[in-house]
Length: 193
Image (tube, rainbow, N blue to C red; front, side):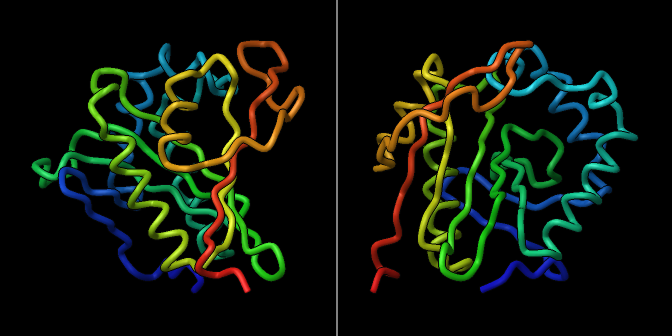
């Protein structure tokens, strides 16, 4: 099933709400990136200085909305369930490179606020995202690329039964240097013929 950007998209777990945000939440999104700038820089491509402004994040939200309309990407922001006004983003998961047809695949990326790392939140969130990808988007394959030095993320995806496929050499520029990434995949065996 294709992404329907006209509907509010919200997923829940025992402790979390995963929610697609609109420009009303630009302050919260900007705050999330500002709080975690140094933490995220270790494993993500360089952010332009303007990325930490509400103007940049507003444009980004609308760009991501266009990608949802095209059925090519969707980003969920993560909140604690008790944060009923959605004021404190604690992480995000993006589903991108959605390819329909013979491939029926996508890639994912994920980040978590440094202050809550190690409490099982991302495991819980990714389990729900995997269900969404396989059951609602009806895709067959999920890929994720992780720097070999990011042991925490490697351990996480392996715990969720992702299988290592190999190395994507010079995959992304991180901190001014081209970095190799390990490629992992998870297959939806229920959709295989």
